[in-house]
Length: 588
Image (tube, rainbow, N blue to C red):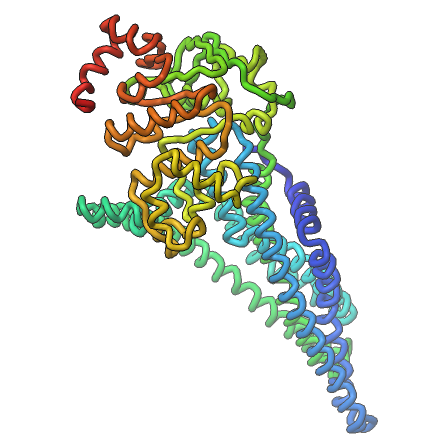
């Protein structure tokens, strides 16, 4: 992970704040400066009041009332400014949170897809989201401004104290240092403690989701595995709690000891002040003001050092966030494409990160416009990986993939994906309206009811249409009060979504796997015939669906073992023929 200097991180944080909430940023600066002068002002006002009370011979009731009124007004204005700053920070926090979460998701959408196979990447995105959702970004910004405020306050009070005796200033600062140093060290260790616990915290979140997820709850009840999963969650939670307790206990003991030096420092300051009065260095009338100044100086300086410690800890964590948003997006070309004529693989090999063996090896094939191709093979043969390479989602370790004779990575992804539609086995069930479920692939036609109904009809999803109590605007999925769909209906809806895009190049990755073989074959038969001159790539492990394609590619152990049409491969008596014969009973 890239490391940044604290100064650079500070500049980036100010830049992000000013960019996403400019008016709030200006208000924060002005309010911080305004509030910071009040502690010293309060000491000066108290000195005046003590002086008037001490010299009652020249004091008047009116004069005392005036200075008390000034004190009350000063405290009131300080209180108002603090609350205004809190309100300002609240509004700024919501703006910044939305903007930065959007930034995280935008970055995540542009990183190389292979990164999603990496544990480190999942940890890094978890930390980045936790920093924003946990308000660490905003707290770090707050620490910066509060540090500035405390600095101005400490300097102004220090000037007042030093006018009485430089020794008072020295004792105040010296008494607070041990506590501050331990906090700084603790903050550094706390960051690394959390950093190394990232994976365990992600695991706890995952296990917790299994305990409450509607999808998971079906299995955990039927299998009786709820208690087992809860036990794993509890064990990890207790281990984390013990580690956090050991860390906190040790830090707390040290902090209690060092905080005692602050108390001794305050007592020493009072003793010196008494000596100064006894030797006539300061007047008895300002003794109270000096006592207040000592207390305020110590509290402000202590807060300043605590803020500094918290800021260092926050900056260490913010390094993770800055490093994430600085992730280099996957580089693509800018060539535009109007039509997919050919896609050609030349000796392509692909290996997943951290995998010991390549998933695909020396793949060579050519797809022409209008082809209907079925890719078949056992689980783990590399069928889905091949599809991700065809779509330009993954980059091969060796070999090249050509689109219309040029590298597929020379083209703009946005330009390419306008021509492509896909239906994946792990499709997304959108818990939105049925209209949105269909039109998500082609939002320009979101309100084209005629086109939506035609697509749904052609894809055999009329059973769903009969359930829609509010027509196409009926919400789907019980999560948010919508109607429920069966697994098959969800899958047919996903197929309809892919068709609705009306693209010339369509990828179907096990699109009807949850349907029975005969229903699957019937749907795909009508579906593929309706596509006419479009290019269709069908991934399946069922030969009844594969025989609908004009060309069949058989994958096994990451290599192309056979290629041809249904009759040719059946006559050859090879892998495809054996697979077909073993499944023949499904279609009789």
